[in-house]
Image (cartoon, rainbow, N blue to C red; front, top):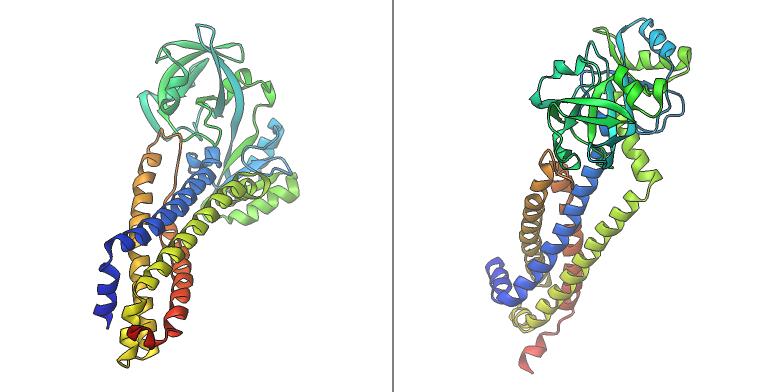
Length: 375
């Protein structure tokens, strides 16, 4: 009977193709939009994408996420360094500034200031030039993914940041934040001059603990004794993502698109599968007239629905993965994240569409009167 069910399914290529195409498009829409949403969440974490070898991020109280932090006093840096269990604490600046080109054009940039001696917070990859050259006065590194914002500017050229002269000594590669502002790396001492906030440029401290120290305990000490906000790197990443979802309209917009894909898939699969069942009612009537039990007919309908759903799922997820590949490039503007959990989770909407569509068809097949075959 299973062979008969599959023969009925594949025996109408036009109807079968319509079901597969409609459901595949719905899977593609839901999966791809979710992948883009996950990519946006990861990109919203800003410097957390490339700053490694750090146990704790410290900022002022009431800090909500990575890009909303007030300036920290230099005295607090020394106080954090003096706590038991802290190996070192280095200043980190991430602030908006204005870059002026020699031809008079200007562009908003994300200025990243790191410690001059340790270079903690450095870009993960150098494309041209040496990272050590950043220790020179008035020196900066430009992000390779946003070179189009600086036409004609190369290693050895100059531009102005916040009205101050800056000399380009290298090209690096790092991941930008959700606003895709070009990254400009410099030392913290230079950032004090290049950032509009001046001497208050430090808005984060990067803390490394001694081996064997408990991260949560040191975070608690910083909060209780120094009245500062302290986050393990993973916790700060989740706090930032949660803020983007709950405090902005980004999550709602993507949710509406994902639900629209589910609705499209449900309507198309239900309509086409119902029409497919209607076309095959005479065959089901013959089977019922020769004594086939209703449970067998139900199993045949479910087999047809599951087969259609799995094939559609495979096509939709495969297309979504292909579409997501360009977003994985280091300089991609439209980023996407396609983990295996997403691929597995995309199966649930397909199951929902197949179950609802199959229930409608099963109801019609079970209530079918075999006498229609003789009419």
